[in-house]
Amino acid sequence: MVKNASIDGEWTVVLPSKRRHGKRKTKPKVHEEEEEEEEEKPWKSDDLEIDPQRQARVKQKMENAIKKVESSKFYTTFLEQLKRPEVSDQFRHVLGAEAQLQMVMYGIGSIESYESPRFQLSIAILMKREFDWVGNIEVFDPVLSVTESSVLESLGCTVLSVNEQARREALKPTLFFMPHCEANLYNNLLQANWRMDRLSRIALFGNSFQMYEEQVTLEPQVIRATKRIIASRGFTSEFAIETVSDDYFPAFHDSSWHFFSPGLDSELPLLVSEGL
Image (cartoon, rainbow, N blue to C red):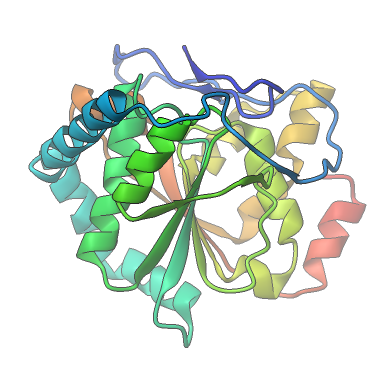
């Protein structure tokens, strides 16, 4: 099921069926267009004014979602994983000497129309409330309306006005929160930070890189969209999350935390030069 599609097609995000089938493996979505640099462009929503009634309804939906997630077994399990030494030590490594890491959310989708984006945003907001090392939350998705953006801002988020195509350089410790984005966006992020010092400043929440590696095909467009994902697997520590219940499966299935620890800076250009 397509969660939301942007006007230019760059931000289509795919959600799975709500049905669970044991060890079912879903096929990660990849972008089929040629990889090419696109100029960052200021973005404006189609609706030009905030609708107060819609705003109130969306805010209520978000408050309900936050309460539901906060009281769930899923969130308890989520927090327990973050506090385990094998994961918390990874965050400390990303932070380095800094007190906080910023959070950047790409491809969140419509929080007015869909429950899964509301659950995903709820997790980000609850993390900021729970951990003092989580800083400002920046959000971008082309589908966000002005009304939705106003609700996000009321919840303490900053809505970006530029579509970065997920090419943000990690010049400081950054948590990229990108559940169920297309492979090309993860690839863009890695490409923009394909240096040891930058990769080490990144914590990434998104589709399992291990799954991409397991399901990679010989199709040229798939290879283009996943080449840096696959190349990074050798120095990526991945921690899969548990969805615990069917309520949270559509929003978080096959999602993992990813941390990058390349051993030698010289390895990275070598991987690219080999055509991976």
